[in-house]
Image (cartoon, rainbow, N blue to C red; front, top):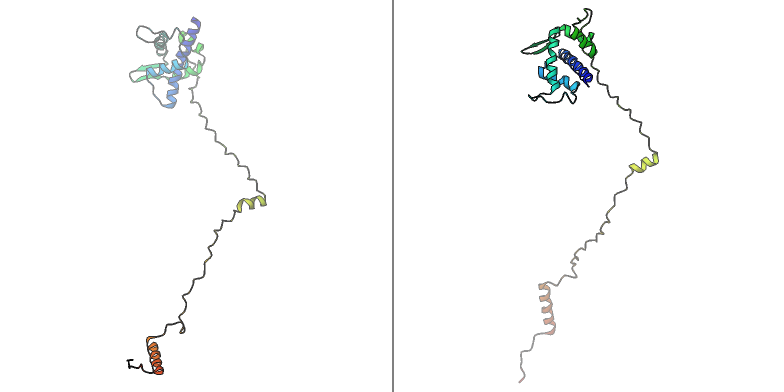
Length: 205
């Protein structure tokens, strides 16, 4: 159990420098609390390290804060009022002592970073893969008969036409059907009187 805790503490301490190195590439500055929190996220605390102390701080978090003093003593970390800053030797140390056990050994025994160790370079970001558009399959041509049947719409229904009856014209008034005029009736009566003669005015006694 103790060996596992030591290994986790060593990996967590190296992670502090790794987080600071990544900040130099992205030009993103983090404060001390954010750096320690990120290191604990990457190397989680075990059950014993998660126990809260009297101040409400986990045991592993307080231990990591204390161990960062070793980084300052080695000249790999500078703690200032504006935050924590990694030095060039600290950047080279992440390359020269890549494994956590080598890192802690060099830090504890004071092994200097080899002079020919290059500075770490930012990882190359992979370009997002382009989505290849799926080729559309050629449309299958329909048979001419089926195509004609699909395009030919049924004829619209015709409403039955109403039969129009011929208009009845008013009867034309001919000369025979016209009633006799008043003058004609008068002349007829006069001629009839002439034929019959005048009425006798003598009365029978």
